[in-house]
View (cartoon, rainbow, N blue to C red):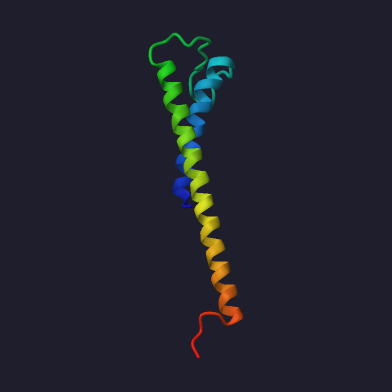
Length: 93
């Protein structure tokens, strides 16, 4: 998995976490950002934003699981090929 893949997966998860956190927790201003606490799901677009960011985080998690499964499968194929070669299988003669 590339570093950019890890970055966009973390970005999707952090966006969802920020929307939900700022709905329930009054964190206050952080490093020049205004206080984004809004204890309501009423403002236009907030629910849609939370759903979209949650879906992005789930898709990112699915992609991570698939990438790890493919890496594990490729590693298993390489190990099997190496053990067959070491045992003398597949050589002519």
